[in-house]
Image (cartoon, rainbow, N blue to C red; front, side, top):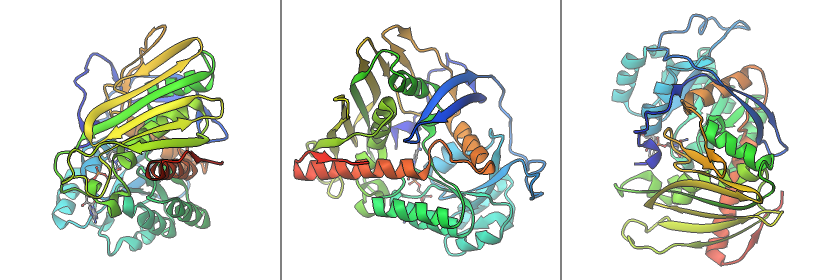
Length: 390
Ligand code: NAD
């Protein structure tokens, strides 16, 4: 189980669903921000939205179809879609008929909005579906994103965007060709502690950043999972958890690294880690000389992001989970609320699609990160310092 799935026991903080953010975007697609929190209640069970199915320009809520009804769709995205204002759970794509029945009943999904992997492309004729959210194993993201784009639907694709830079480019090209939006499931771009880190780093609140330290790991239990299958996962913990460290370091700096050094960690469970790495340790070297020390493992527990600048420091721990995120700076505790990250993320993405604007986490950002992930593997494999040009 992904450690991000572990619910927070930290109930002392307010849970809010409304959290508006005024954002501009840097040249790298990274937000510059100001925070403005507002409180509101749980909107309760899903109902068909008043204007959801009327179509046309007056449509207020966009219909989302989730593709792949595994852990993340079941435990996070579908519940979050009961809280959203700009989008709602309109349809599902699943290869398991029993799941289709369960979801139809639970979420009041009509038969005509239920698809399987064979008839998926017919979704193009369904005006209820505006956005297809790809929540499949990493190695399937490219195929389903491209098919969704060719069906004329906007696409949200889970992280990592794909298992190669070439696939990322094909996904971006398909969305551009079909004139649809493409956005990545980077929920932390709507999470206030992480947004504050972006602000502290990018706006050099404590002066230029000199050092970053970050780790994201969990202990994998069941060895019979796609996450340990090289073809389906694209790699090990780096692809799944380490990508948050890559994101954290880059959104602290506001720019991508110019070089990578890396090595694989010790393999203590060779029977489990015969296709993907157990642990990986890497450094991201930035243009100003700052270095991010990073670590990700399927055999440890961690979730931390620390930044050190000339005149101060900050640290999030836990940094990357769904809730319970906590942080402090050299000046004291961060006092931000816990939010429903997935609800805010999907609302933000739907709003951007509606307004025909680029989302805060576009396909280009996903491709940038996959390029960094591939450089990390190359550095670990070869022992060389791998330069990156942008
Ligand atoms: P999961 O194993 O729980 O679910 C995967 C789903 O894909 C299942 O419904 C499975 O039936 C389906 N599937 C279809 N074809 C398959 C095949 N050939 N092999 C295996 N499964 C197949 O995985 P998950 O945890 O829901 O992860 C799905 C995606 O979501 C991954 O890309 C993962 O990185 C991402 N994810 C993101 C977050 C986040 O916080 N943003 C959290 C968890 C997962």
